[in-house]
Length: 248
Image (cartoon, rainbow, N blue to C red; front, top):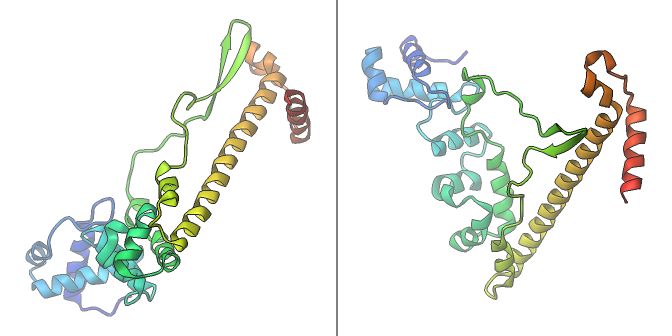
């Protein structure tokens, strides 16, 4: 559907044939030109044509070029987001915002707005179409019978838990941290605390639900599928609520 010559189209097919699973071009434009029997300029036109196709960015050589192509396709090619990718890609991390603000002279909140535009981009546009090995779903919770009792435990029990990095608290305590930066950090820390609470609430809910299932289906666990009992959501929620009230 692109308005390109047959020569460029033939080279574009070779570009597509030499993409890796991430959508990166694995060979140089000189090699594409040699394979296609065309000029290097024609091969480069073919690569640029491929990068416009959906998914946008396939055919780029690295993450920076891939993101810039996607920003250009969104009409952000000459805006601040593209400038940040072009000149400060390594600094586009939450803990580097204050440093980046000082380096560029741009307000922290404005930087955060532009970084949000970058975060929705896909640095690996080829991956959804790659032929990968199937990823098997692993259970979060196991039920294990110990003597006559069934124990419920999470797979990640004993693993390090999510926490807020002390770096942010240190930034808040530093005298040279600007008020804007402190307000920004406080807002993000509050969001992080809410996230941790929600994760813990989710764990507790899953645990209680599995306890209800074990209580209801003990005979099934002991003797097999012929002892499986029907369960309705209404009954399950009542049992979970009763157990929660009892536990408190």
